Amino acid sequence: MIILEKPYVSEFLKQTLETFQIQVICNEFAENQLKGKRINFISSQEAIQIFKEFENAPIYTNSENALEWIEKNLSFTKLPEINRIFKNKSAFRNLIKPFFPDFFYESFHFSDLLKIDVNHLKFPFVIKPAVGFFSLGVHKVENQDVWKDVLSEIQLEIEIQKNVYPQIVLDTSVFIIEQNIEGEEFAIDCYFNSVGKIVILSIMHHLFSTGTHVNDRIYTTSKKIIGENLIPFSQFLQQIGELAHLQNYPAHVEVRIDNTGKIIPIEINPMRFGGWCTTADLTWFAFGFNSYLAYQNQIEPNWNEIFKNKEHSNFSLIVLDNSTGIEPVKIKSFNFDKLNQHFNKILHLRKVEHQKYLIFGFVFVETPDDDSSELHYILHSDLSEFITL
Image (cartoon, rainbow, N blue to C red; front, side):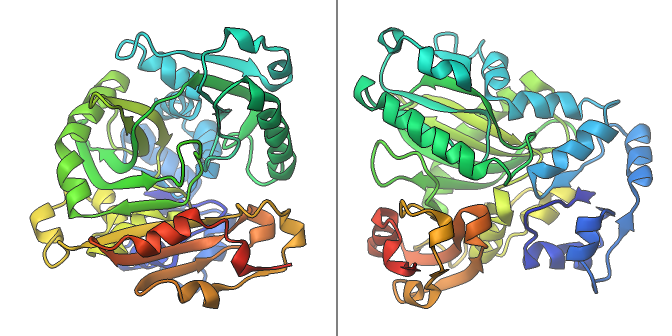
């Protein structure tokens, strides 16, 4: 079954729900989004009863906004506790401490950050909300000289974001400071099946413009990226799943591989794949593989079939975040036609209300694996050339 909540449901997910008659828990948002479609709606009470009869029933959320319903209605299951551990970065670090006993992290109330004696901190480090989403409020702090500037940026971000997401999704009252992890970053869509076995549905390389940037801009996948990382990531995530006793549980995982080849997790996002129906839709646009259906029906990808005729392409999700430095209220529009001219093969374009959600949209593109010029351009652009004030 699936529970839909704000902010967004993609057309592809809607089509999947209608075509395959996946159970959808009925609420006002779902009814509005799926109006006119033949949907297999069930009531909240019916969903609760299913979990009373089968505690590990598979359930997926398109948005972490839905975690509130699970917290309130499925308290007799282990789901709320697991979600709280994964959602809270401090609790997650506590969970995996046996694997990483020397990893430094510490939590602070935001009001106490100005009082920290930075002389006792080891630079560089990363600061982020203990309960966060979409790289909001996440900063890499290189040295003492930039510390106060970073705090000022965080305060501004808090003010802008305070009414965008519910507290269960983004809580800026507590921040975690943790040691910086050098290395390549990857995002993984996966699920743990009915017997707790890890099933990886996609692996994406998270590209950054510089070593100090930690924002979302490009996630790219290919036969090479998945082939090189499938086995080590599966082995690593199987350990996490056994530690947390996960069954019928979808997740969006972010990790880094350091210069020794060690996999170090950044976070595990509970009960969903990439936010805004992004990474799961990318798998469909790229490979014709339906991640939503795979989880619901316990399907494992046949990678040999998936990669047929796809060997020499990269498939990328581009997040058009507002990196212009200009306040959203001062931006009238984003020129998507001009953006289109920079890409040879756009698979899908998704526009977003930028003044409300602080991103302009998402672009799904296919590029040759031997030519990264298109991705390089958009990775290093602050997008100011596309906006009208």
